[in-house]
Image (tube, rainbow, N blue to C red; front, side, top):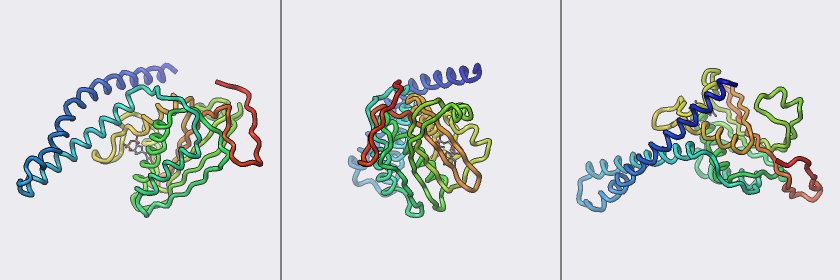
Amino acid sequence: LQEQLLRTQRLESLGTLASGISHDLNNILTPILGIAQLLPLKFPEADSNAQQMFKVLEINAKRGAALLKQILAFSRGIEGERALLSVHSLICDIEQIIGETFPKSIAIHLNIPRDLWSIRGDLTQLEQVLMNLCLNARDAMPNGGTLAITAENLEIDENYASREPEAKVGSYVAIAVSDTGIGMSAETLERIFEPFFTTKAADKGTGLGLATTMGIIKSHGGFIKVSSEVGKGTQFVVFLPAEETRVVISEDKPELPKGDET
Ligand code: ADP
């Protein structure tokens, strides 16, 4: 517990530091990006070599800006809105994006029941969580494979909770993102939620995706389970507390009242 507390404090100060640096860096990057975009317009007669340099300048300024945005999202403390959300439409939104942008060598399988309980949360943050998991799955399958997104209603009882240190008794919607990719070693698995931990090339990974994901899920009262096998694939399961008001779409399943409210 002591160790956990220290870890939390370390993460908090890291967050404060990151947020301070990001704001300053943002002020520095904004004019660089602006001028990089203006250069080719100002100097249309510049030769192709110079045009190429303008492009490199612009691309890298944009990369810097994207990285800063991620750091800010991570450090902003994870307040966010709390609206009643349907997990079904959340996943459908994500599916549309990945369906259009992921390589065709990756097959996408969805299994989302219509009668999932609703959850309360910040749509943008939860979309970010699912996107992070899907992007990691994509990166883990450079030669293609299957990305599966499934969801289910789950009642966690004391029995279950005693086996899972992170879990608390209650009603959850569990969203699983699985891939048939490279998998992770035990050493990697142990560190994936650390900020800035990445095994990817510098221009591919920031190591902030899963740290942000964990922060968002915790602030929603949820938890995450990961299982992975080298050469076989990885599964992340995100558990989000269900709301009392359940979204029931099919007629034959009556709305069930739920006892405890947070
Ligand atoms: P990044 O994607 O920028 O590296 P993340 O925090 O999202 O940062 O992930 C940290 C590390 O966790 C990755 O570099 C990778 O080693 C590992 N990882 C995450 N998801 C997967 C996955 N689905 N399959 C294999 N490794 C993964």
